Length: 408
Image: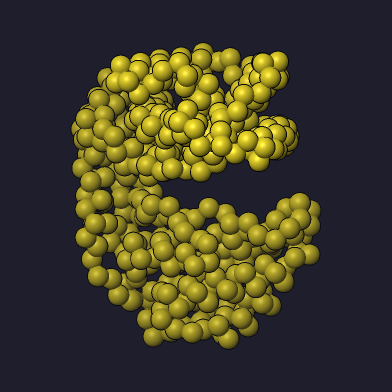
């Protein structure tokens, strides 16, 4: 019931209404150019209730990764074009279609929405299974008709049904791009209301951000994340936040050459563990108004099985010029799989030492990591520190292990 109530929310209804108006204008334009007529109505409806609505529910994903929008046309139709071509080439009995079309539309809308809400994961899996069963049944019937009457597939009407989704998706992409930008600004502007208490300062920051960042939503989100860490009180502080932000971008674009013992280039250090499936977010000041300490970290990377999987994370600390601390932290939530966890930490620490120091220290690292020992390894211009922290109140006797490489 929660999914159904959410589908009726004001914002969602407004978005679907706006999308419908845009699609109607596309079809009207194609009709004026002689590229659409009512014989293509069925194919248009199939496209609308599959690709168009599904893409609308994926707007948040597009706003998080704008580059994915460019692949909307191709990716959306790797399967849908073929299905629509085959299904559009044949007409089922009117009673069957009157049942199937509303059912598929309704289920598709529920699936698309449930996918965006983690709390509806079980519902999403169930509805996907139902849709898969329906889809297999339809395709089975179509393939039977295809074998029985192959010549019909090659007719002109069917070919038009095949091309139509590609044209509609290409013309639909600007709308999705607009909605992705709008969704990002909506989130950022709400965040600014909580970050900046004075209304006139908040309005000024919002207006200038729209002028400066326009459609560059990745930069907008990064700037707003920095602003959320501090409490801007004046227009002057807002201007200062913009200056510092673009100075930071300039340093990233033309980084200084950094060598030990000073540390490592932030741009390089963030990517030291990509081969291990670990990458940090952006390297930002802890307090943008007093940018003396900088920091970034990866997400917790889970591995193994069990109710509480073990995980590992990667942390960078330093200043605006250089990273001077690289730290791997292993959280052993399930000691029954400790051996597997220690092996993962060893692999990651070995890769980090190779990338950061250019040295093969696996034998030395393994002695400390496999047995969970604490200690320090001193090099000519670096230090490696091993620490272990027990969790006294943990139900399963969990603990964490850290390996930190720093300049000296």
